Length: 254
Image (cartoon, rainbow, N blue to C red; front, side, top):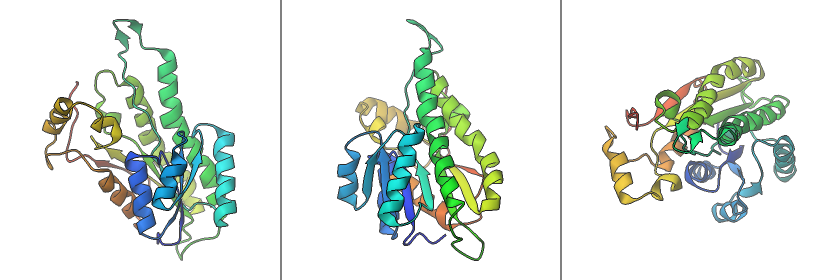
């Protein structure tokens, strides 16, 4: 798919990998809509030349309304969807204060897994009715964000790992289902990235994280995620796959 002039929807677009992806797609000529639960998404969108919508990715009506607004604004549905919205709480299965809070486990799956599926299913339904973009009858591409924690979850990451493992697990069956509609899906599983969640930690913690990296000996940059997302859009043979973006990192138990 040629990115230029395509409409892209990026969730979790207020900061981190979502914002970097939006900025990179805009630099390649895409028209981008940002979605985030935070009200500040409108200001971020204005700063980078996108349009911003405040919405809950796991709420059907909220995302349907956003898709309606995008079609009204741009005259067509998104052909690129990048799901970056997510949360990363930590809690042990059995901790000092008792068992893992069930509501925290449910919330993590709701945002990370159900939210990603909700956005992609609603967007894919609209893509499926759109005209083909090229001779291969391609109609769109969906990129989800998992994590290396889907494979090597650390202590305290049961909820997070389960949510990201679900994203990895649904990638191939969805690719098989959407293939007849000319829609691709792929997942990126980042390692430790230089996002606000990490940079807000102490220098000591950040240095400890960097020491676990093999090569390059640093945290991943949001721009590197963005470049891989763009390559997935442009390379039609990438479909039904999860790609690790981690500098050969393998997480230790803690």
